[in-house]
Amino acid sequence: MTTLAEKYFPSLTSLQRRQFSLLPSIYREWNNKINVVSRKDIDNFEINHLLHSLAIAQFIRFMPGTSVIDIGTGGGLPGIPLAILFPDVRFTLVDSIAKKIRVASAVSAEAGLNNVTAVTARAENLSGQYDFIIGRAVTETAQFIRLTQHLAARKSFNERENGYILLKGGDLEEELGPFRNSALVTEISNWFGEPWFETKKVVYLPF
Image: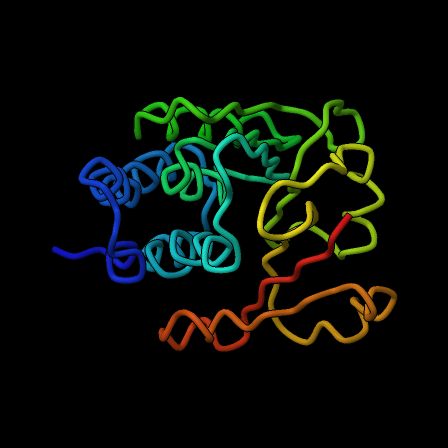
């Protein structure tokens, strides 16, 4: 059966196709032990979580050697689907809740990923420099930037300048008001035809 990942990313390798096909069952199994995805959402995992995460890959193709940190990753989203798609990119998955990082670590191991590091920590206590800081419905944008701006690596080598890439939904006019001159907001429905994406957006803010 063709997965949605294959539908929108037809040049996947056989290994990537296998990894994407495994994710829904791995997450379902772990979600029965440690709830990281809402019960009603797990039935729509492929659209609401896996494909949603991959919207970032429609916005940018990370170059090999890029470092990406996923803040508030929960059980590893959006980081793990992106790590499958970009095996030559280093992903650091961060959440302050240890049991969620336990799931993210287990899922990445079961999917056979060797480009993922999962860390239990609060963003403001982290050190290191990352080319892109990503997040999925974590907190409002100004707060997110306040907590993470010390992690920003300034030297860019990707098609876009280093920056924040956030997955958000709904009306963002007020939230993004302070960033109106720098934020680029892209409708995910430009890339994915499923109705669930009609209100979903990728927000990009260069460092």
